[in-house]
Length: 104
Image (cartoon, rainbow, N blue to C red; front, side, top):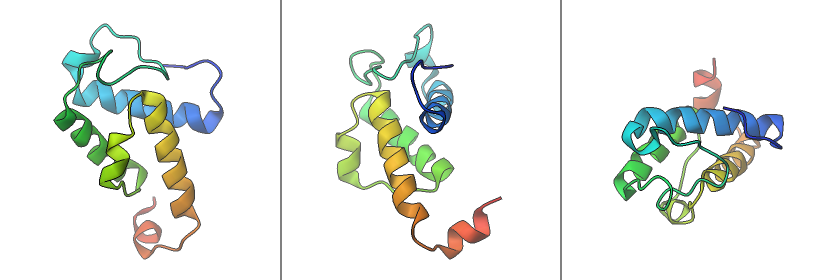
């Protein structure tokens, strides 16, 4: 699902996010066109538990660590993409044996 106007890296993260969202919350996303501005509550009516489960999966997939306060700032899919990109950039600058061992 291509979102117009996104850079390659943002587009890749957006596509991975929307794929995981459709897997984790099929009822909420059925028949919905997911965009950068899609709001978790007003457009999808997902519960906070569903958002937490989604973010736990994304933490694992992107090999980043989210703080609890990060979850409260996530209103739209674009917010999630920006947060994941920021965390990925921050973690790429520091050495991690775990990342070295687990990176395919």
